[in-house]
Image (cartoon, rainbow, N blue to C red; front, top):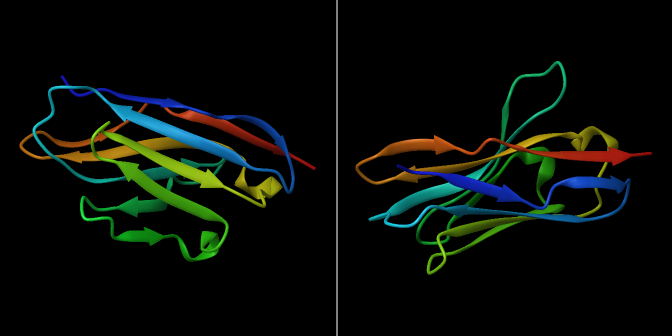
Length: 116
């Protein structure tokens, strides 16, 4: 069974930084694309960032320059560095992984709250 375990959420003041991490359970043959989505209160879930197994990244246009995604393939872990956080970045952040032969998976989510 594939499990995604997120960590690193919390409360931060506007302008601050947070780093999220997400580890995919072991015994995985091949993890393709990994990434993060988020869902703010009263809004639809949206893509934050993606990174392929080759390291190619993709970001939501509104987040370019403030958020950075990277991964450690040896540890099956993906990270999201969030800088210059804004109140509107407040959301539940979900880890995503596309696993070969298994499909797409999301974590349970980690709360990020940015105060003014």
